[in-house]
Image (cartoon, rainbow, N blue to C red; front, side, top):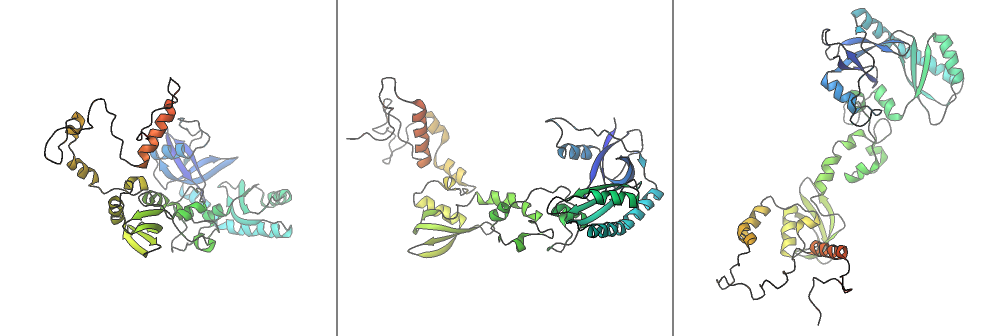
Length: 372
């Protein structure tokens, strides 16, 4: 069975082909000649075998669910040194070709910006990439360029991100653009990512060289979302050691919470200290407020009570040391109300609503104390 091979061309363009198993295996960066539209093209291998198969399946949007895409075309042959030299000459001539196209665009006063030009290896096709704010009628331009360059002309409109990926550049971090170096698939970036990370919403500070939001905003977004689940929400009022206090801000890196009280003013407290204060004040469990418990909280609860004794229903010792059952402990008495706070009461109300009215027409029994 033939192996799948990923081949990349200029820019982020890539395609998948087959390579027979009986031939010498291909390696990454090997130049190959592959079939193209109305001709052949030269590219370099970037993935082989299982890695290429997984990338082909994950990057395919036209396959059905569970279907594995199999490339329809096969690699023609390995590229020779003469083939590579011819491709390099074409790359050097592409800038002159782009300038020629820019002059033709200015002559016709078309509202479009020519970003790049790419020759097919056999010079039978020229792909011109451009950006424009609105639809452009370039039919006359294509006809004149085809007669001038003696090749098939393909004009493709791209966005600002794709233009930056093709032209490359240096970002504010001092390194080459991610989209032109290693980030081969450009995903959507929204302003919500910057809001979740509490970054400045000034476009000049969170935009890249393409004028769009930075792609790197997505790198740490999952970490911020996961870390904030352990902290109380900002703007919420907590009843801690000093009474009601409002959560002003949280510092997920230093594990701190900024609180403000109308009576005592602002203060900074660690996340673990805030959890202890809420427990001492009789507030709902920290888990209900979105604060993660201590790692040893579960083990300390297990030490305070014997699970086997509780499960067996054995009478618990009283304050005076005897093991006599509590006066209210009898088989006919209703179980004591749960003391797990507001979430437990909400669950009881939902159960009563699901049970509906009693068969005799009366109201469902209440779990609270009876009135006078």
